[in-house]
Image 1 (cartoon, each protein chain N blue to C red):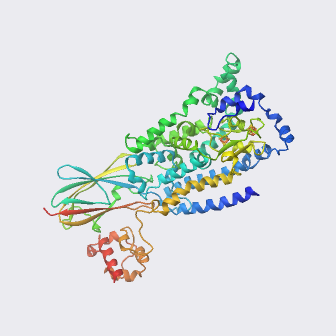
Image 2 (tube, rainbow over the protein chains, first blue to last red):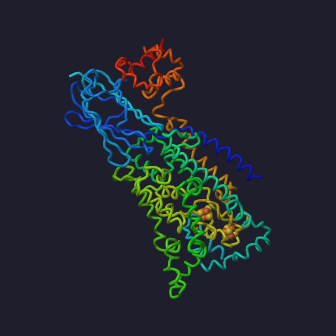
Image 3 (tube, protein in one colour):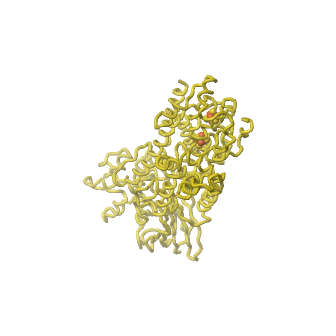
Length: 151
Length: 470
Ligand code: SF4
Ligand code: SF4
């Protein structure tokens, strides 16, 4: 009798907890960013901080991520870049950061990807660059913030 | 005699040695005497009824099998459906993705934490909270996660059952008994050893791995594996751990994500499970290192009451991992997964229990034990979720109270209208799009059309922000 009672309570508690955990979404793939300045100096940049750039200077942005979910259905080329909410287009002079080379990706190991793109900090001001990978799992969304200082 | 064989709590126990110790035969009674003694003492023999229950091992085992099957379905089924989601398969809500379940992934995360403390506070990283749950289970209940929930442990155990049926004496009790004779040298000169051992029994089964020097120290290999995975997780060693991860192979078996080497390791583990009980757990698992060390202090463990025990050693014979339960008062053996088989097999009620010190708070059924493990496992996850350290999606697209800043470029106009609570026509008008515009178009695609080049995601966010603030 005690066993049955214990088992019933245990079953109910277990089911409740599983439901609670089930509500939690899975981990997303995670990007690590490195900015290489005109002098070749590398610095790691984070989505939580604002990065200062010099007006007119050319930079390389290195992006690295790992497919946390495995079997990613979208390749690195499908990453979406939005500069201040608009698609970041190649050689679009009207954008404050001018993309000078398309992102080029390589795959150092089965689930890791590293890509680089180059841009010029053309216009002084505060700009945001969103990187978005949307998939049926969690995908990724990160925003880099830049302040371009006048020369 | 009895006093001689009872060890202090935490004293090392060697199952194989115990099982074969001839001196033990004079301790208490042989198996055949058990019912008599039990009857004399007025105990109800439970061995028979427990051994013949569901799946052949009684309610203790049934409660464990239910948990094992359910967890295997949740983890492998969930992963399979997630892999097929692109083809339109839905993942039910009760199949969450629990990354820290993977024995290599969990230790890898711990390594990552060494070099990146911020990892702990990143809500999108669930591994560490699952690991915390597994450690909590181990600290309180011993390595019960291995025995009740771990999918890799479960498949090894099942294959082991098959191995017992197929190999019989090479795997089971008789194999162990034979092994003892060989080890003592009785059979060194005889046909029994030369004929049977070299022709496979000893070398194939636990006879070799379970008894040899390799076996005694093979458990230490796990520490090497642990150090390696930790170093790879911390980034001190450049190695793609998926290449050797049998757990990934198990969970993603039917997909291209599994490297050939990982699949080979997985099938190697399954093959070895045919002849050795839980080879991965005992000799290689890095997660096991954390769990067995935490288990050394667990208040709930298998406890034997020397006063009630009649020395029949049925517990020793039934233990699938060769733990010498009858030689200890509290099992602290690294191999013990708290499966409860010994408790169920003991014919003397009260002689063996899965309980806290002095037999307090005994866990009386397999189902209760399984649910207790599940509760402890999810406790850190639930707490971390409560304080926002676990499970906050980094790209939550639509909040309950609509925030234009959360508008994703991958939303369609249709979805945006629904999320913002405005009619589609109203939204189109607001953005300056014609009323017959296709609302299935993604927001980031609107600017592709030269005519609507200015309608970028940024513009849409701004427009809706203005509208909300009006
Ligand atoms: S604990 Fe139970 S099964 Fe083990 S030796 Fe004692 S009486 Fe026998
Ligand atoms: S000692 Fe008992 S609980 Fe531990 S593994 Fe052996 S049978 Fe299972």
